Amino acid sequence: MKKLIFLLLLFSLATVYGQNPAIQLIPQPVEIQQSEGVFVLTKTSTIGFDSQESRKIAEMLSQKLNRSTGFSFKPQQDKAGSIQFNLNKAPVAQIGKEGYTLVSSSKGVVITANKPAGLFYGMQTLLQLLPEEIESKTPITITWSVPSVKITDYPRFGWRGIMLDVSRNFFTKEEVKLYIDQIARYKYNTFHWHLTDDNGWRIEIKSLPRLTEVGAWRVPRFGQFGQRAEPKKGEAATVGGFYTQADIKEIIQYAQDRNVTIVPEIDVPGHSMSAIAAYPELSCTKDPDTKVNPGSSFSEWYNDGTFKMLIDNTLNPSDEKVYEFLDKVFTEMAVLFPNPYIHVGGDECYKGFWTKDPGCQALMKKMNMTHPEELQAYFMKRVEGILKAKGKKLIGWDEILEGGIGPEATVMSWRGIKGGIEAAKLGHDVVMTPTTFAYLDYQQGEQTIEPPIYSNLRLSKCYSYETVPEGVDAKYILGGQGNLWTEQVVTLHHAEYMTWPRGWALAEDFWSPKESKNWANFVLRVEKQFERAEIEGVNYSPAIYDAIINVRGKEGEMTLEMDSEVPGLDIFYTIDGAMPNIYSIKYSNPFKLPSGPITVRVITYRNGKQIGHLVTLRPEDLKKR
Ligand code: ACM
Image (tube, rainbow, N blue to C red; front, side, top):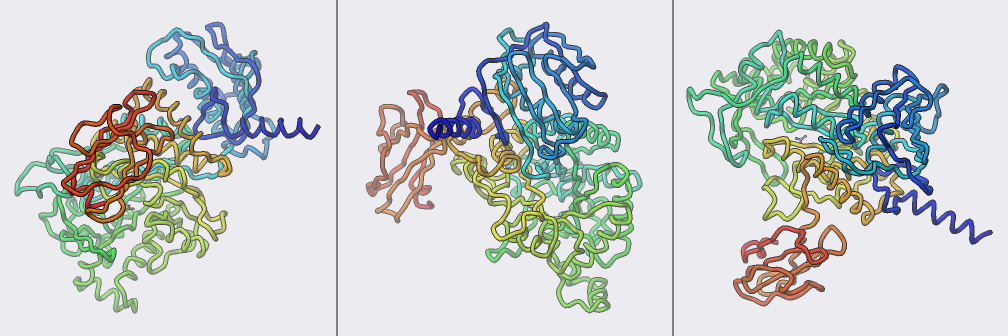
């Protein structure tokens, strides 16, 4: 009996942890039990829904299935569809607002939830249970089988977000919708829309037309962001775009249909050059020649973490006109966006222009302030008041803690996790989005071949992320978010490349039980998603297949250590100038590099086939490591 219980336990653990190769889901569900047999979807199958609320999900599934199977499903209000969507009459506490159960057998599939959100996620799981050809945009003839399973699933966190910066580069309405669709499929429920910054104002504010007439457009520039030429006098600003309020309504509806809440961000008081280009009187310097920045260098960053802006990109906290301006912006946004949160930025605000401004000095004196940080705190409290009056809640980057903020403010911890820890200890709600684990703009592999940007963040590091910091009461941690800044991201396909597969790791960090983490198993599931993405035409980064090369010791005594994120790859290298391949030296152990002007070339293979990029480290690269 004991042996039997042990075997049963082993089997259920194996299935819970997704070791069955037939089922490879991301994010990993809370519980899966697999049994013998499959359901085969055919043209005579039916799709049923039990209520008007579940109808939308059934229709969404039909559209998707019709496209790839060539069948013509028309969902029916029914109790016995081969694929059936049902809402619980009495809510089941275990699965909450977003959870679901999915039971499949040879007879069909039943997805049950308390709310349509749960049905939507059950549908996503069903799509991942089907063969990857289900992602085809044209009809394919294969056997559409679904393994027999019983899944009970619900999220670990209520805030599972991705941020897209549409200021540094403008993404069209259709691109934003596609991106929202992609994240929703991995059970993200929050789209943080970074709508304004120094490089473009993207939301139509009808009472402030210059924001989009002027602020949405910059001069054309190419090449490395931060190194581009300044706008020339009289040069036409032709690059950019914005969303009309009608566009925004359409995107909000599209997101709502996918259980995605949009958190719009107006980044103030810093990062405001596009607003100042439109209305120069909002800044301390009031320079009428301020232009929307095209990616030139206008700041200096110092080793102690401080910085200086060479062009004023900051709103003037001592000027009542600024609060009248923000009142107009937030009045229109409060009507547009149905969710409670408005993100007001607060990050990287340079105070140098404030300290020279007589109005700011007078305000500091009047309010008994001793540090310019207190001006930012004053500004944020005013903004919080404006939002509150419109029934909205303030969320901001962790700098909003400096100088104090109202207890109801929610803090987004980005400069590592310390801001989140401090905020939670003060009793604020927190969203964890640290650079060290969640910055999707960072390079994801070998730094000499990935497009250059501030830092590096590998998939394995994202996957290792534990959202609740040690010593913090978990009740303050709403969840987590990955952030895609787009200084170096010009196209949607590149945005996809930066998002996937790291967005899959974060999806699992924020949805799945932390006990279910298993890197080797996750890699198998990532590779399955790669196949799906290829069929669907979604880009991803294959950086996990590239060699990782670490150098220890100084010049003349260097030891090279090689590895790869994907287990079991064969790493071949040369130090004699030849191109590496299977005839080169196969790496097995760390080795000493002879002294001399050596270039190391490394490549990875799996099953005799090249799988990773060629990595070339010249003597100067080796010296730098
Ligand atoms: C940020 O990355 N500046 C929030």
